[in-house]
Image 1 (cartoon, helix red, strand yellow):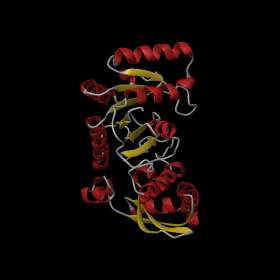
Image 2: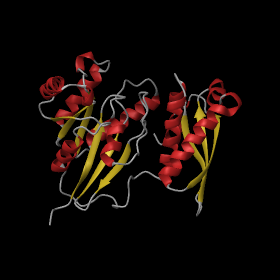
Image 3: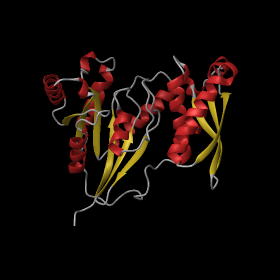
Image 4: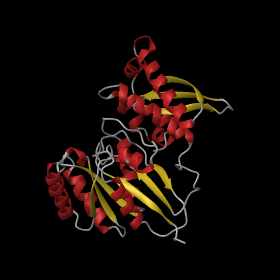
Length: 298
């Protein structure tokens, strides 16, 4: 009989390189929200991939950035935490990225230096390689192997599935022997309310432009579970009174669209009917407010 394996696989990288898409692909379930905008992930999100012989605990972290708000500082604290407690650390980079060309060169250098000091395996997932030819992929792989000689570099595509089997087999090979940390029935250590807020926040990122998605936070005011239907009352918090009518839209059209699309995804996630109400409230300058940030789980 095989010895059981289990461990924490912490996913790092700059914004918008496909970390959340990769975690969803590795798990086969959508837990992390995805959009074309940077900084979509704000929290450290844990997802579980279970089999009889192993439990992979994936942690999707916020994208590495230079903090401009206290919210960003809290987000980067999740990244630092992920560096400290990983059984396997996985840096996701976009095919074509070069450290010196990155607007986050200093951050990249610091993270790579921290990864080099870890007493655990490090993997570089070279994402979006489906957009490159074999010669380009070989050159990119060689570049990252030179930059991070302590790491295993694997070309992948989180969208097309290219290299995912190789990545999963490598992760399993490097996973330490351990009993499971969580019940095998669980997909995540997060409560249902958290994923409801994340689904709503994903729709905000999809439907609003410029600063609006970044100044919004979502909370659950009321969640009543029923046998046939769950009733949810959610609040979208904005920072200024002038942002409120933008989120609501003319005649409530924008908010209705967000609510309608979110309700469908929440129903798919919960596998039951949902009655969803969403309202908009102003919390002045919440991204800089320590008390409010703690209340939002940061």
